[in-house]
Image 1 (cartoon, rainbow, N blue to C red):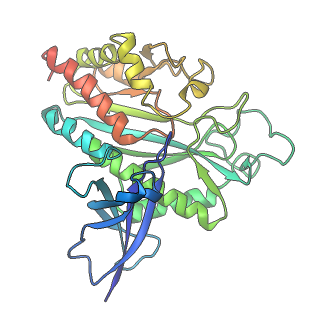
Image 2: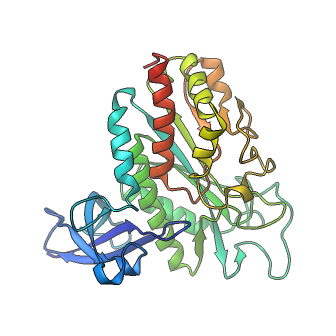
Image 3: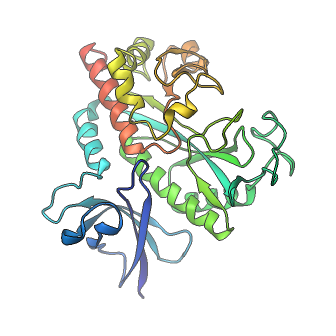
Length: 340
């Protein structure tokens, strides 16, 4: 019996890439063929040479269509076999392989905001809701908006076999979070992109838009981030490696800017030094400090081992980019320090 394969890829839209997808009917899921698309319509080619190649890299169950239907996450290649310039997964593959012996593990906390029309879900027309306070992990119709979408999205991520590990309502009305991990860099990034696809498709069924805008509501409201938790084998075994990793991320102003400039669009609007953030261009780390660039959880200090949380990445960050940057910076420093 024929199946539907939904091919999914990341386009070349700037400043923030978008997900694209299209359906191919296959006789079965035994062999998922390479496919192609019109790159001139996705900001990945010019019209006179528009063919681009979709190379399947991860296949999961399609929890929306059900049955034997599948979702096919793809990398984008040129017709000559070279990775397309927008293929950030290819760059991550190289770095992950280089430092594979350090056994890096990630967990990413994906915040997002529901919009109904031009207003965040839960914002009254022509006005504003009560100030932040009761919405975070809130319960009740006055505190929480969009739970039916969130629960369905969670079920679908589980059904697809993604490494989703939790959800919660966030600080602003209509703002939520799901977490992917703890898994390796490629898996956390692949699963986050597929989870984003399922989020958009699920919200679409309710006539709601899910956005990864870094500052969805101007004024005294929290932005939306993608806090990135990271550890290596050495960090999971000793505290000296934790400090080395933290120090490496702020080793120089050049290093700080290398990261924040690739941590998502409009980062200056979110990382203001307020709303549980550090200023975008000032690096700091501290134990249990949600106002620092990088937080060492209190239990990590108690246990003298564990992981760190980079709180700077935006909700709209490319997970292939943030994981590559962190692995490259921290693992290089740990290697030089002999902490591997």
